[in-house]
Amino acid sequence: MREVCRFRFPEGLDAEIVEAQLGLAIIAAESAFGHAKVRINAAYCISGEKRQVVIDVSSPVGEHIAEVFTGLMMRQLGEEGFTVRRVHSNPALGEADGHRA
Image (cartoon, rainbow, N blue to C red; front, top):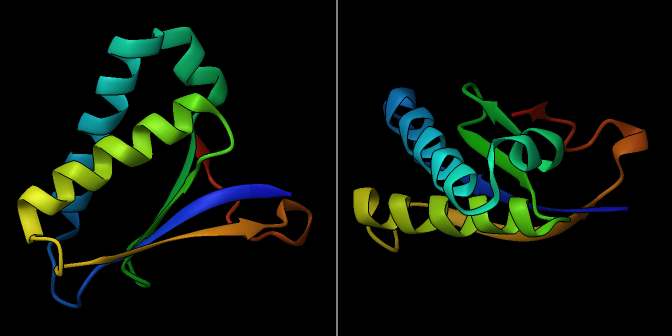
C-alpha cells in the first residue's frame, strides 16, 4: 500500500503553471535531500485531462515535495483555488502509478 497526495485543479488552469510549480518543489527537495535521493525516492504523476497531480508521500522526500508544492500552489491560486487529499493507493492495481524524478 502506498500513500499519496492527490491535488485537483480548476478547469481552465494553465497546465504550465502546475508543471512549473511541481518542478520548483522537486528542486527544493534536491536542495534538502540531494539529487540522488530525490531521483530514487520521488514519484509523481501529472494528468492534464483530469487536471490533477498525484505525489507519492510514502517517503520523507515525497512528503517534502508535496508540502512545498502545496505552499507554492497556495501562493498561485489561494487556499480555495485547488483541493488536496491524502489517500492510500494500491500500485498493483495501477492506481497512482507515477513518474520517477
